[in-house]
Length: 222
Image (cartoon, rainbow, N blue to C red):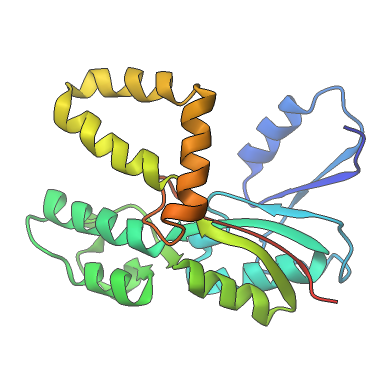
């Protein structure tokens, strides 16, 4: 679209793939960097910072640093993090499926939204994830505002799809669920329902099964 873009990633492989996707474009600079420290950039250097999926939440105890740095270097930000509500259920599933008991990390995820594999002797049996930080919409909003930003919107995403999937799995064979959800997800009317549900019916809902269950848009508070 003609914008000057900086693509920043921690992974050499992801940068390689991104360069392949950007073949023929000369307005993208690729940088390998950990998002917890963006001191190579000036304050307000970017008109917009996008930070989606797992970059914040998989930074674990440094997750708030990633939020702070994104807010510092961007005049406007669009961010997503893992939902505490959804991750609590996910951790309960890991616990009962893999260990056959409720692991103490389930309650910590529910109360603190945090998991660190180093805190538990048996965590290797539970998950391959080293560290994770999850939030409620209120917590996410508070951190963004504490970094001098005005939050335009902060809410869960995908809650209606999450609930609908429960019905699909109850009524169909597992192999059929994938086809059914892919089919309905391409329907504009369904997407409009999901958007309305997330905005007005359950903005503080469980979010999606995926890593990014809460989405926020914010801009510098002049």
